[in-house]
Image (cartoon, rainbow, N blue to C red; front, side):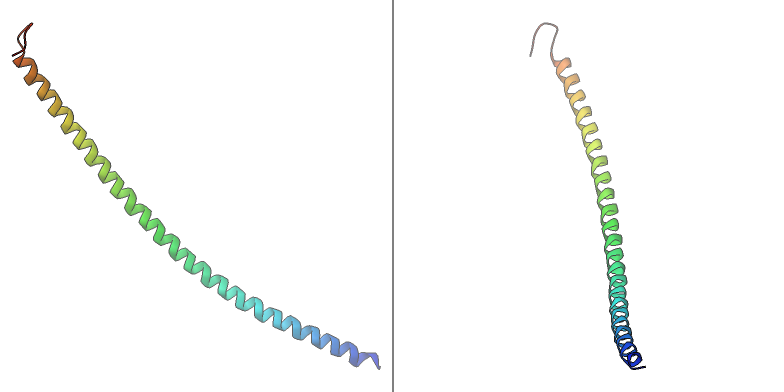
Length: 92
């Protein structure tokens, strides 16, 4: 019977350490969940930024296409004008 209190004492110390570890794990788990929520929010913000950038790039590409089309039409009209000014075999 002399050994029982010693074993119970060491067991109670172990239980106290386990309780402390569990509290620490709960705290870390709560912090991890909070970090994950924050990161999810940041990811959503980044996705929204990417969507806005894609829309702006699409708009820019359309404007560039329109501008090139205008340039091509201008060049065609200028070439037609030059052709009309040039007589066969001579330049005015």
